[in-house]
Image 1 (cartoon, rainbow, N blue to C red):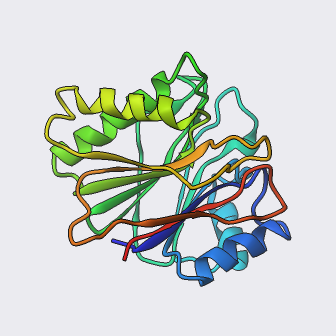
Image 2: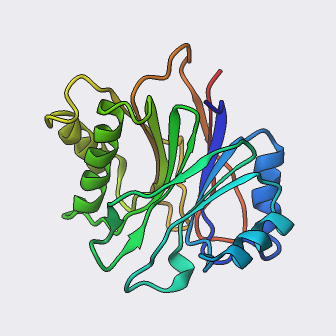
Length: 226
């Protein structure tokens, strides 16, 4: 699996300058996979070609629908490696919401996720975790790395992860929440995280950091495993 990756809510088209510069800097700086939320509309072959003209990547997965949301809310997974796009059933915000983007590289599935969670409703994230646990249990992949804007605080998300682990599909499969060391949003809240489902064989405790940038109200979060 990739040793370093990032997640970023780009708050609009990431092919525009300076947002494209942020993405390229992260990828050229050693991140083999990037998960992007609110990346702008791109769900056809022409748009995929446009991404490759601007961003140095080999594989791209794109969320298939934004439902009642604007096209800006499309999710992406970008990688310099060779991967296969995977369709997930869970939709952020319910049936009228935005689909996750997922890219499988060898035995690891990378998911870009944008929840519509609130303090009282994290049902879409709960559903995503259960779906991903099922993929690991069925051996469709060895692990799932979810990066995204979960729109909730770390304590609530930790509770959601723990609850998913107590389900039948989660029995015996580790779920690890990786929390950045500081706020990820201009409101001084932390909304962006990584959740890893399954084991990280041979990996030590990761380093996670917030990368300060200007072109979005969110900062990218980068994680690396020694």
